[in-house]
Structures are given as C-alpha cells and as structure tokens.
Length: 217
Length: 217
Image (cartoon, rainbow over all chains, first blue to last red; front, side):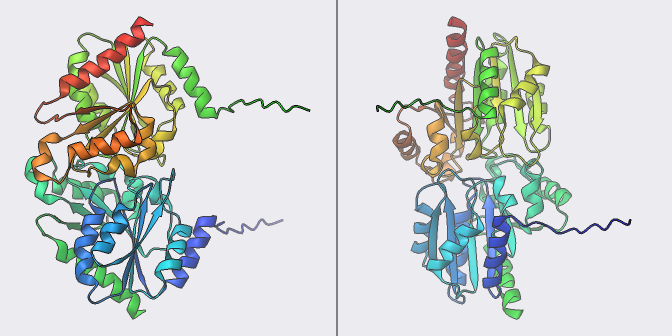
C-alpha cells in the first residue's frame, strides 16, 4: 500500500493569535523592534516618530518586565503608547499586542512594537508584525550579529546605533555588517546616531516605505 | 481534625543538577556573571583573571548562542576556558556547567561562568553558583536595574562598567545605584572601567574574598 504523507504545520497558540492580529492589521504597517537592553530603541523612536506623527496615525506598544518609563517617554513625544509589563517573561506575545490594541484601537497607519530588551527569546515569537527590526549599539561589540544569529536571521533590517560613540570604543562597523550579512544576506542595514541626529532620515524613509507598502495593498 | 501542612519544594531537573554541581564544587568559589549582550563581561574577566591566575587555579565556562570568540579570548589571557554553544537557548543550565567540568576538571579555586548575554532568563536558572554577579554598562541607561528587577534581585553584586564613557552618555551613576538598591538593598556595588583600568582592584578583591570564603569552609 502506498504511503501518503500529509504535512500540515501545527500552529502554536501564539502563532494563531499572531495570525489574527495580522489579519486585523492588514492595512497597517507593523514593526517589531528588538535589541539588547539599552541599545536605544526608545530614543530612536522618540526621534523618528516625532516627524512621522504629523503625517500618519501611529501607536507604540512598549514591552518591559517592569516600569512605564518607555511608554511615558513615547507619550511625551506626542505619540500614543501602551505599556505592557511582562513580569518574569522575557518577550512579548501576540496576545499582549492584541490587548494593547483594545486600548490603542486598530485605526492606525503604523504600529510600532518595542519588545523587551533581549536579543534571544523575542526572535522566536511572531507578534503579527510585517518585519522585525534589530538595533545594535556600537558599545556592544561588532560580533553580536553572529553571537545571536537566530535574531539576525529573524530580522528584515538592522540599525547600528550610537555611532557618535565610535571614537571611544573598539567597534568595526564594516566588520559588523560583514558578520550580519554572513548570517542574513538580505538584511537592510542603517547606521544612526540619535545624539548627533545622524542617519535618522534613512530610518524615517524605511518606516515610511513600510507604511506606503501596506496602504498600497 | 487538625490539618497539618507538609510543605516540600519540588525541585526541577535543573535545580537537582545544580545541587549536584554545588556539592562537587563545595571548596571552589563559583561566580555566575550575567548581563545584556556587550556589557563587557569577557573584557572584565580578561583584565581581572590575568592577575588572579598567578595565585589561584581558575577556569571559565563561556556561554553563547554561537561562536567560540569568548573562550578564545579567555584562553589567550592564559586562563582555561570551555565554550558552550547554546544554539537557540537563551541561558546556560547546570548540565552545561557539569559538561564543561568534565573537561575543565574539579580541581579549582575559582570557576567563573559567563552566561549568555541576556538580562532576563538566566536570572531563573541556578547553575550551582555561590553568587550571580550582574554587569551594567553606562551606555545602557541607568534605569536597567528596575526594568529588569528579577535579575537585580537574583544577584549578590552589580558592576557598573565602562565608566570611561560617562562623559558621552546620559547615565546617572548615583541614580542607577539608588534604583538597584531599591530592588535589592543588599546588592554589593562596584564601578569599573576596563579601558581606563579603573576599579579593577575592587573586583579582584571581591572575587578573592569569595575564593577565601570557600577555602575557609
């Protein structure tokens, strides 16, 4: 008797919820920002969203084990934000995004998710995003893309941040990019200094492209 | 009828393995270094162990998702090291330490474990250590001790690293210490710059105290 293999991926609870979130946000650009703690995600968002908010309806979901510092900072920049405190948990899940959207509403052009500062676990959780965007600060060492290859592979873009500190640290930007491209050849790469206000236009353009792509659908 | 509560903690597989490791290392000081990726654990160890290795028998277990960079660096500093690659995993477990000790041997004065760069998950895994030691770099922001309170509470000591970068970042050392002590009042705190070679003696003295405590038992 011939054997027929019927292969069907069994979705986890999180993947099912992520699919629901993605369906409800099908006209909204959704970006999931990930990095080590303190790589500068919030500062970058403060800088970039301040300009974009004049043209687009934006909201931010902030993930942290504790405190509302980040949501407070985003709100102070004039953008809607919802803080999720994960307690012991090391990553956001799609259900957290859904809960945030109950408050923030779905009538958006852009939803930014700032994940818990962790270069490991958030790589494996789909939040219904269009793309994951990874930040690396130049103080962290240029080998991070290959030391955390799962995250590097999971991302569409990598932003090398805090380039104003390059004169004071040992960090080879070209070497870092080479490492990253070795793991993920398609990775879009941007370099930025929020302090020196350099490279922010590139990030703004990347985000705006994502918004227009979703609107064009 | 009177009710008698019999409480007995049910140990996880990791906790049982950690207890075994602790028993076998009962005369060895065991320190579990934790931090975000790129806070400078390896550089600190290179600096501090270079001196201590003249007096004590030391080995290092290096945890990373991928690469042997860190073990290579420790070996280049003249200290025995064993690299554990965790693959997708976000933390070391006691069984990884046991496996490393199969190679490194138990005849040691000091075993240093450099955990996977992750300020979240390693907080919850006992590796048979005497103490967890947390590094925070001044580029990461002074609120990290309260944003990652589980780790702050799990540690005996906190080392504020890269103080040479203080002139170029917004980081309030006193504020960071206040946050940390708010979460864990007993936390021993040290400030260090490996680049400027400042504060290293304090870390050396802390580690030596741990070695002598174990020898005195």
